[in-house]
Amino acid sequence: MKKYGIEAQVVSELWPKLGATDFTSHVATLAQARPDLIFSCFWAGDTPIFMKQAHAAGLTRSTKLVLTTGGGVHESLKKDFTPEGALLGYNCFYFENTKASALAKEFTRWHHDKFKEWPNYESDHGYFTVAAFKAAVERAARAGGGKWPTQDAIIQALEGVETESLSGSRRYREDHIMEATFFQGFTTHKNKHDFVTIDPVSRWARNRSRSRRASVSTTGSTAGRSDAPRHPAGRRLPRRRACSWSRRGCSWSSESRRS
Image (cartoon, rainbow, N blue to C red; front, side):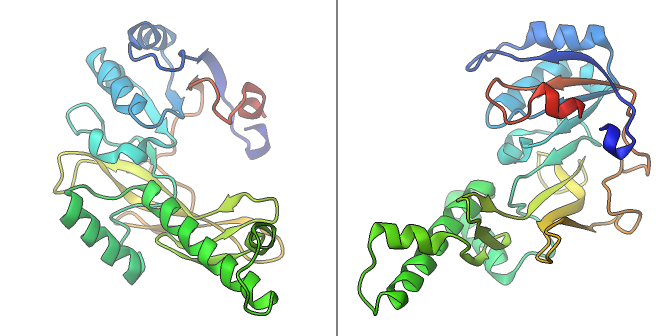
């Protein structure tokens, strides 16, 4: 954070045990620490469980929240206990992206009609995995004279493969790690659902220039203020006192959070 000129004091770090569903003691610790901001990389069912317990303790009224991957269970984040103004990450797919491709919009409609649920990032991962495998098989087959390729040939062909997915263009890097566009924004209750959505929507995508830096674009009713996400009222999030909140095994380490 020092690199970006952010002055923050970490007042507490909490690591609940994997599988735990009672966070009341952790919520009490957070309330006692009185942070300006809580950073949480909870995902799946952990996020709404924590939010319900935090709301019941009054924590959501006084503290700003950063929920980096909570959007994966967006329909579980009900307005009753999820406040407006929390920074919410949706991973690589946001179902109400106004700038989505025709493919994504068609898939979103189909998914909701069939399953009565709005799709999340897992749909994008699944679609891309199949599309990338198809592209790799075709690439390897062409290189092998039209014969069905071996497993090693397919693996080699997957390295660097890039194809269109629901979220946009995605690729496998040469080190076998996926790259994708990520979506995040501030929660709002101004929608037709009983759960929160985000506005404005920020897209964090890989820049295909040689610098390979991340590029950011923002859409929504408050777009145009800055490429960096802001609070809906135009204020940046408080940066003085912060609590980190995570499951053991998350890729964030205490060293990386403090750097």
